[in-house]
Image (cartoon, rainbow, N blue to C red; front, side, top):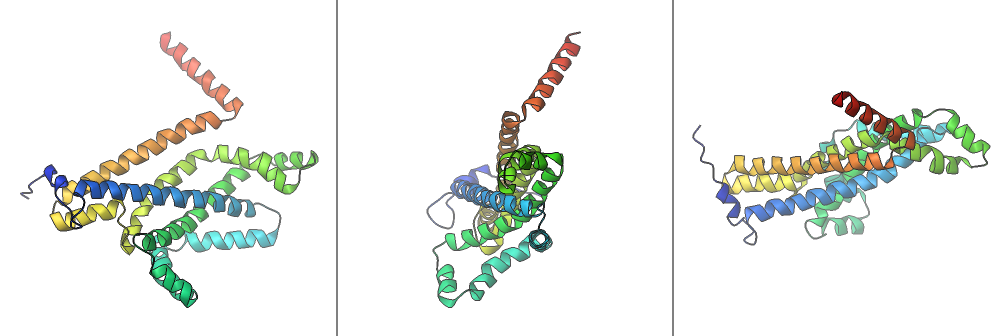
Length: 258
């Protein structure tokens, strides 16, 4: 294979006539970050609600939450993306469906992608949080109720703060997964990072340069996410956990010096 590498192609003008390919990739990176962060925050809030519903005493609430989780978790993400983009506007009242389809680009692709990724990720976060709640000692809730807190207050002030501390590592993995899953939005026309790279390779025929750049950008974003949330995890860790970590560090240091 006699492939001619040309990194200078990033300075060529893209088909829109306004931006270079490098600027197009950076714009795509911005849409990737905006879509991933917005969908993740949406999923974090709704996932907390669904996760709590999975652990309450009400059988109806648990059944509704379980149905939601199984529905969104067991349908392929690509299929859900097509349903949100192509099918939802047809099911809504005609005026509303037409308004959605006539939204200016790229918002008419961004919002269906946001809803798709948000509702899909909600199911995963709900299960993660449910596991975190179940990992706590059973007496936590009874102790909170014995102190005079209501069930809602017990979850808000006692259970959820501890559960979120426990599940920060898997939530970090879910955020990284969200960033990578956002590339599916390319299939409905949103020029996020993968879509921008594909656009570059289709018009410039520099496929390796385009996807090498996209790979590096994904790696940098996820590396920042990992280390940022690691620092956050250390900051919000329970005092006993911080004390154990500090003790372990001192022990390793003493062992190394000896």
